[in-house]
Length: 185
View 1: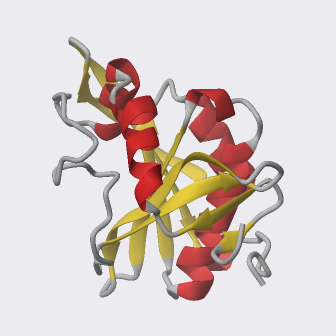
View 2 (view 1 turned 45 degrees about the horizontal axis):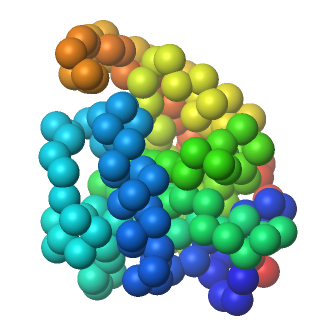
């Protein structure tokens, strides 16, 4: 992988056009997975759709989207983003989605660590937040391993495939972060 930010197992780089069809097929077209991760009503769409959240046309101040690449194979593993970037309050939310074949390999912790480096060191943010379903044990574990703390549960706040689920909020402040400050250098 050339350019971008590198961790121990994965790198984050700009989204390339060939990534879009793969992410659409393996992440968006997985109705159950997309419903749990996106919090929007799922609707079919072709990979060429301008409505694809995987298609990045221009950088924007409110979000920073990356493709995740496994370093050992230089293969697209998923996507990660900082969203709801608030430059006044210096905060943002972290989102991660891995292709099925790349789950369970410890990539989540590496991605969250890199996203913290990007948010705290590159953007100068003060607070990062993870909002996830309370039964998303993989994301919760990844965030907690990096130093995020559980701040609260929002009961019955997510409509997921016919039932309400709880959201868990985890937060981390810049001065609490003890991650690798040299990621990507």
